[in-house]
Image (cartoon, rainbow, N blue to C red; front, side, top):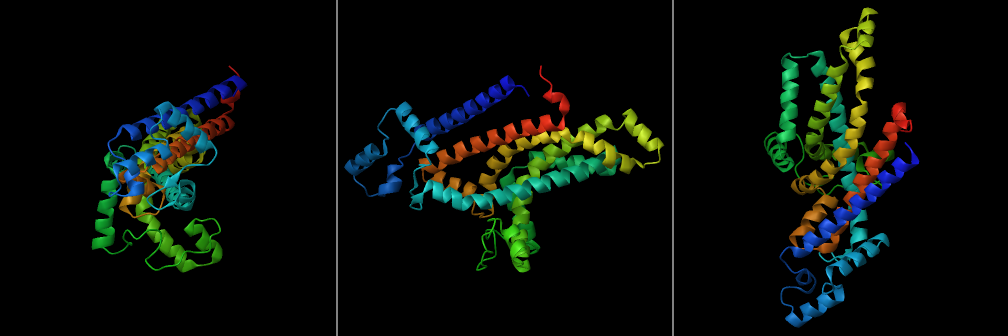
Length: 338
């Protein structure tokens, strides 16, 4: 990647972040409602409401409010979560590990599931297993995450009683493991608390599968099409002629050459996981940032929602820049200057 291309991508990334923050800033302020009521309560007088608006800077022109908001965000002053009475930064930092752990396992399940089913789908090309896997992928892409989550709770928690209900990251009354990585599964494993590991994995299974379902469908279709595009290449014919079975040729040679597009797709899935986590965390009572955002939207808490939107934009941009760099490392052709 040339210096000029890198500068162009960084400039585009900054522009994306600014546009995302501007859209969120404007939309939240044109919606009906009065955030000062959240601070002062429903019995506050009109004079007190007006005084609080002046104190919060809500009477200033929008462009001035936007400039103040960006400057404060860069300095780490994200305002207060008036619903809980603590700074937004502190609230986000406390809830972020839960969201990151959920997103990590959702992406892991989506990727592993897509690789396994895509290889089997091509192996059984145009046979019953292939049709079943393709139907499952279409279902995953067309099903709303909140509906899938509710149905999963009804089936596995309410009727079959094989998985826990929406009680958060652990069973009610259970103590979290020592905070080493703040991922309950990793912390339980590192501290040797096997019961806590099983409990945290059981609570992760349904929300992670629900969150990663759409990502699975996208990755499966992408990988299946890539595999089908190389199964007739000459090098695979040579591999088969040397005694490799069809499955061995697919796994050892076709799969590594078909995984490159999924690296780029990983950056696009970040936005999908962030958006889906808002509803999934609410359905499963998962104490992450997504649940915090839903609670803040209901009470018109500007600071929390704006911080979430801007953080999401930053995360999306950083991951895409990292994916571009990784793609160039994997494929030497992209490092050649044009």
